[in-house]
Image 1 (cartoon, rainbow, N blue to C red):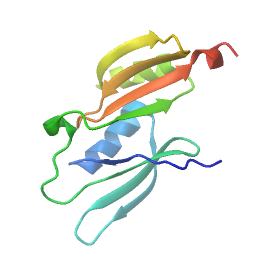
Image 2 (image 1 turned 45 degrees about the vertical axis):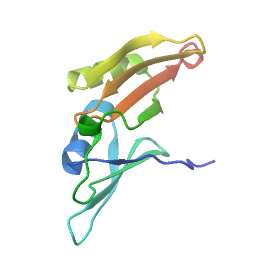
Image 3 (image 1 turned 90 degrees about the vertical axis):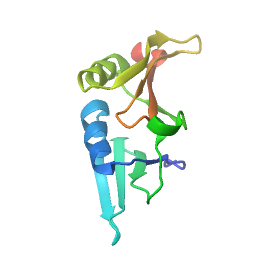
Length: 129
């Protein structure tokens, strides 16, 4: 079944967000649209079929860096230890170190440059397969 729920994240600086998500988390840009008023819509994926949308909203928007926690994205990756190293090298703010959870995931949490929270995980059963 294709992905049926897609997170849509709003960024004050969408261009900067695209660069950071690519560098730190390994996302790649799939599509970009710019409206007449300059608003931007970007589709990115971290693996085939695993997408997020992001955009730049109109005036008055305040992102999570200004208003506090608004959501958290939980993303499964093939090698969370390597992913963690990449994110740290790119300047992501780690808010939860790598940890093995009782239900089987190994994960870590971080914040991107504009305050959105992300958790990346690998099911430990997949690591031993």
